[in-house]
Length: 308
Image (cartoon, rainbow, N blue to C red; front, side, top):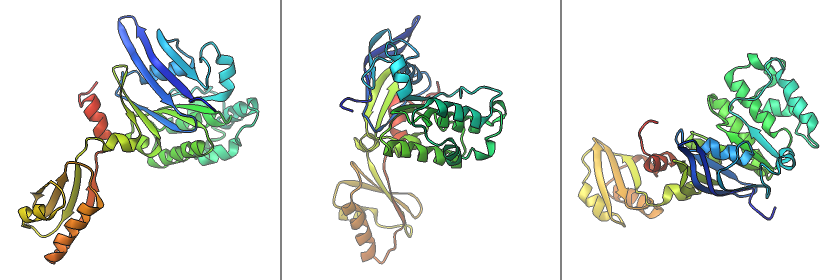
């Protein structure tokens, strides 16, 4: 593919006096995982629905696999998988019946039985959709989105409400999709999910992209690094700070717990210097660990901490 899987430029969508999307631009590269993050009401779902062809933008352009998702909907449907939060199943149909039906429409589908096994749905194969648990419906929706081997998959909150085992199974499926060259665009409220899966992250707020980059880029820029360790109480903090290779602050926030804060990322030289200083004094630093800003920290800095 000689073009991005999804290209959005200056996208706008209004509902009466409410502007849901206000000049949003983003790109999903072919074969990668793009995570769209944002608080409730930020415009994530509306943006994805316009990419899927379910809504027309009021302004701006959308290209999916090089095509217009509305005008070229018939050509795109066999190439795109969509996982909806609502599930989209027939209430009376059995789980395996729905998955096998979708597989029958595809030219080269995944094996439905193997897919259900990977997602822990084998025991529910003969259960009517309306009787599935919320987590089972969620996993079946994922299976239905990927069984046809699409080139691009949109996943809307793919692990919402799942237990840890099911969440990790879902992550494994997403990783396999990426390994197979499938582009994945997902919206999620789980920052850990985005950090683990995404090649690129777009943080959206009030209908605009407020940050774009890889998880590593977003968590590295402008951060303070922290090195924590425990040791006997009462170490000479001034002496420790003076022995370290960069400008740092050293504190003992709790008795026997030490915090070294540096204006940038913690590097190996700083860790070695702390360990050497302690060794010279026959002090064993225990539980020594580096803390960097997480994607959740970045998200809250950009979008605020107030409830919406």
